[in-house]
Length: 76
Image 1 (tube, rainbow, N blue to C red):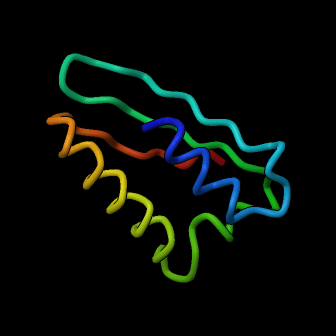
Image 2 (tube, helix red, strand yellow):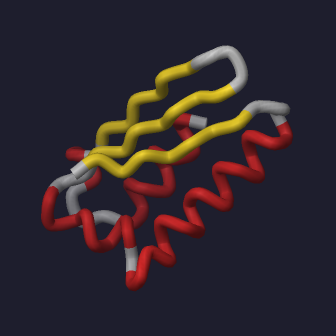
């Protein structure tokens, strides 16, 4: 899951070297934290949060296949 989010985020931003993804795994749920450069934050979130919602939808679909639950947190 971590690699998937990192790949998507690096494709969206202007400074891909500043993309940091950390995954905190629990028994059934994993929290994925995404941190990007300040000026790229708007690109990851999108207008009215549409891009962030789309990334979360992809993450949910991929984690459902693995029978886990994943939550995406975008860190400022």
